[in-house]
Image 1 (cartoon, one colour):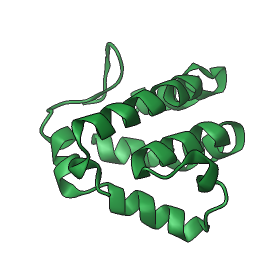
Image 2 (cartoon, rainbow, N blue to C red):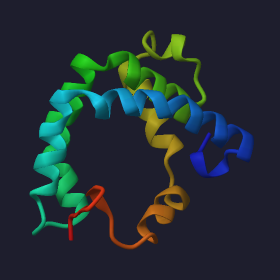
Image 3 (cartoon, helix red, strand yellow):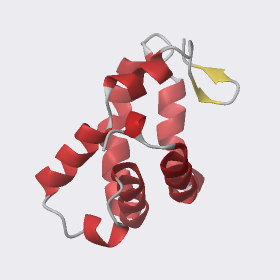
Length: 123
C-alpha cells in the first residue's frame, strides 16, 4: 500500500509506531556524527546532502538499530514487524519502494526549505 493511500487511522498508527524507533536512533550519541555532517553540507541541495551521508547512516542503523529499522519498515509498509526480519531482502526493498509514491514525496517537496536540525538550516 502506498503511504499516500493510507487512511487517517492507518497513517496515525504508522506515525505512532515509528516515533519511538526514530527517537531511539536520533538519541544515540553515535548518530550525532551524521547530523553534524549533514548540517555541514550547506553548499549542497538537501537531496545531495542526504545522499552524502546516507551510506554511513544506513550502515550505522542496520548495525546498531536493526529492531528500530524493522519497526519503521513494518509501520510504513503495514507488514507485521515480526515478518520484516524474515522477509527476502529484495522483497523488503520492493515493499519500501512501492509504499513511497510521488504524492507522498510531493508533500515534502512543497514544504519549502528543510533543516537538518532545529536552528541549523541546510540551504
